[in-house]
Image (cartoon, rainbow, N blue to C red):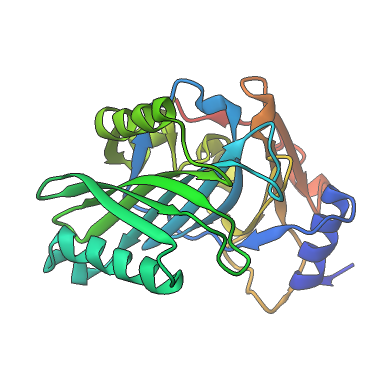
Amino acid sequence: MKTKLSCLITLLCTLFINGATAEVVEVKHPPSSTIVLKLPDHENWKEISRSVSENSGLVERIPNSQSIENWSELICIQYQKNDVFKSICIENIVNQLRETTLNSHPGNKVSWKILENSANDIIYEWILHKPCQDIPPQHEIARIFLTKSGEMHRIGFTRRNALMTPEERTNWIKLLRESTTIVPWEKAAVDNDLSMVNKLKDTVDLGAVFKTWKIYTTSVFNSGLVASFYFPPQQKENDEITEFLQVVTSPLHAPSSLVTIQVLDHAAYEGALHAPSYAA
């Protein structure tokens, strides 16, 4: 039976999360590069938010033991590509961030400090000392990179509802200074480090039959489950669909990760459905 695309996506997402609400984001071509953080316990951080395309990206992670509703630690990686960045200096970007942050939290509730800076990157720190509207107190340390090709990369660690301890603060400054670099997307996909790449979803190799199929949507759930929906190149967004490929991955089970594959017309692709391999 043919089904409207939007109805099908909604139905399948509902089935997977047993009535919970999923965040659905559209995924296009990945960026050419990404920040990579060599974090010793990166496998203990789960993805809770993802919006990545060729020219912009944002991925957020929290510890596996925490939930979206009441997290206290968060790592955020951001990316933006714009020709404007080729002609401005990184100090201007950071100053604009500072002004925006201060204006958003009036009443001397925010302190802001540049910790280290060079021609192409800056490490800064800001603290929201008191609650502001619905935003609780938080303490963030972040690093921004600006490349000659017009790319802005940012990574930050946020502690919510408390200040970082002196030891935690020192550790994150050291991590951002010594263990953070920008690498090509392809390299991040094979390295065992933390980046914008979701290794299970972004590096899965479904074989020659599905090589030309494109991701239409990706859903990220509280549990860390990621469901991606692929459609053949001839499929139009507003058309009724006759076939799709669904790939479900669970980073929390790595390295023996759960991968589920479905197609609407199973018989037509039975020979192509096999255990997927991963880029190495």
